[in-house]
Structures are given as C-alpha cells and as structure tokens.
Length: 98
Image 1: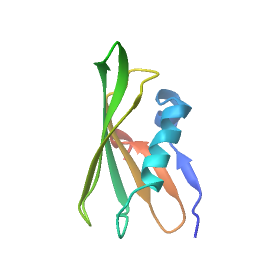
Image 2: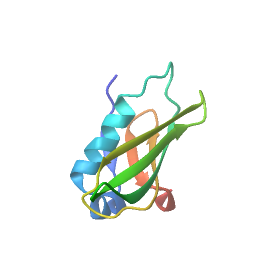
Image 3: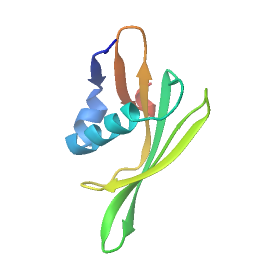
C-alpha cells in the first residue's frame, strides 16, 4: 500500500526539492527484507573534486542497515534527518523537529 508522503516546514524551508527527492529515492530504493519505521539520514556537505557534495549516511536499526551515499550539493546541509513511517503516512523531518 502506498502511503502519502509529507515534509515538515523545516524540510520545506531548508532542504532543496532536488535533495528531498534524492532522499525519498534512497528510502524507496533500500535493499532490505524489511524497512524499519525510522530511517536516519546523517548529512554533511563536503568539498570533493572542485565542487561540493552531500555525504549521506543512511541507517536503520532493525534489521540493521547502513549505507553511505554521495549526491551533488545545491546548498550547505549539516544535520540529521528522519523519515518516519506510521500506519497512515510517511514524514520527512529534521531530528530537532521530532
């Protein structure tokens, strides 16, 4: 069943739509037998080969999953994001908005 996806005001105001789309794609593309209700994305922007990229550490606790991704950076981002799934929707938010 496809659940509606939401973002908080903090995500809307500080994460570019292209980066939001990339994070949703990382969530949807996970190769795990089961997705935990809580997905954790640790973001930092780093300089790499004459440009900036987002270094993203994506993890969940049960079943254990950790993967590192690099995507083009359109703005400086540092912090922890969550994607939380409940029975009626999926929400992307900054950890401080939890």
